[in-house]
Length: 441
Image 1 (spheres, rainbow, N blue to C red):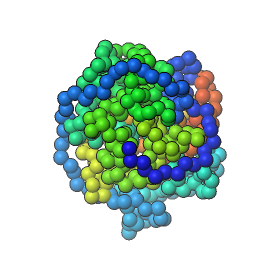
Image 2: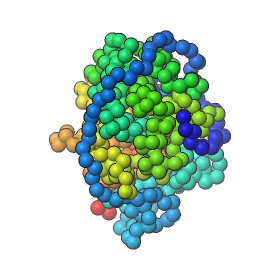
Image 3: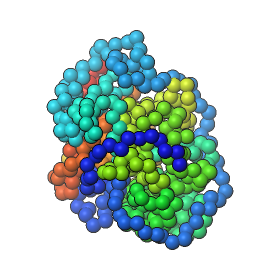
């Protein structure tokens, strides 16, 4: 395993909470706490990691375009590139900036927002204090919790392009001793919360486990199947650990962190991003068992590189990181079920401020809204327990990253708990930034 140099920041030891705790679910029916998880170690029996035959899932030719490397200076920039000879005249972000400035505590002490509109960085603003002390800057690295899923989905997409994985590749094709419904789970299902698993015993989110093989063996032995794979949506990041191990095997039995560096983080220049974002004393401490669904950590600037690349047809600077066809596969809903088959989502405690999220469904590592008349995917997000909210709004040609680090919870009106930074995003930040963009045109 290549150990990317990271700094272990003195974050406080915290209660390890799920992305969004769903109201009324307190007995095993909570969403995946993909942030850390302190269960005790144990062993899980004999499943093997035989890799089976290769698959192909080609995604077509690259497209042209330009983006360039990000900078951290002022001024209006091409999408994360050098300062451009244009101005931000016509954008009125005064209300948005004032709201952020007045709510550093709501963000957890510090955070920021970056917006890219029509290929230009038009807004980048940070407030408050970083977790390790000092000002929160666009380069401050914090744990993402479940906002890790979108980045991990990009790693899987890159391996699909290479023919090492396929969206329809079954777990049993890689773990040849697996049997039953778990063997039939596909990569696409594992990365869209439709594989049938619930979080069950939190057997895999353990920093000290020897490696991901041990974690996935424990998942096979101990985590229950709740429904037939591909028939319902149950928010549970545990399946992504299974897909992550499949990726390790099919990429030459490489460690997940090395796979991610090679196929995604390296090409994007995301040099500060890592998968050691376990909250507490293990933050920044290398492990061979990163939580694929929940322990990435990055900065405002670096997450913006990723979402801009997705919006830009997979191209970043001179590099075609992903093919456009791969991105469209990732952005296609894989959970178009009626509400009766949507068993568990992270949005339930937020319906009072964002009732439209009842209609959102899952793509690969992301939540998406499809226009019911056209069937086109118009908006995508990937939220995390500490409030991070990267997004793409295709109707506005708008890309952004909202990055607080709020560890506290508040009681939701219907019961359960939720993150106040996410409430602030939905009720205040999102409407204000949309108004500013729409007024500009």
